[in-house]
Image (cartoon, rainbow, N blue to C red):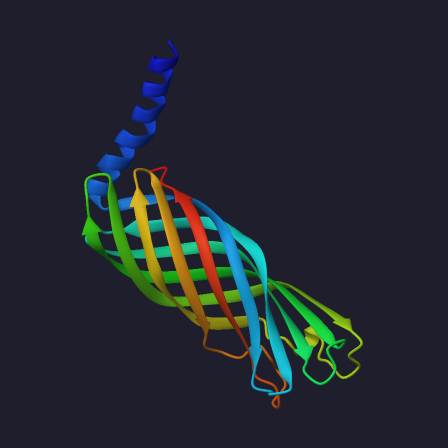
Length: 198
């Protein structure tokens, strides 16, 4: 009986996914880890990376070549430290809604697995700002952070049955800071796992 139930569950998940792939459409939820840092153009400030998480959903159109828009809820964070006085520290935490639009191509397409490369722009809208400051009187505040940002993502991934795994690097293109004398850009690495429900 357990084998029958297991077979039925596999059939319900794998068979629809196979038909959807032939039609060039797949979608589903995804979740993953984020490794983020905020980089400045000031030599006396060091940057430290912080880890967090993200979640959301993706849609993929196409077979060999494809377009993949996504809607992601991101936690972007990083630490700035004064080189001359390490006790001066700021932790920046931003919650954003991200909309990547990726163009990709399959570089290997096997029966149960494929490998992909992709790249594309991503727009970020900040929905929550938090800055924690320690021993730094002249540091900037959350009012100095812009409400939107543009970046470029590129990376690679594999699809294994109904699972999709992506490793990406995001290069910040626009400036988060409103202060003219301080450029603040966010670069990050993400590792995510998705599940194709179609």
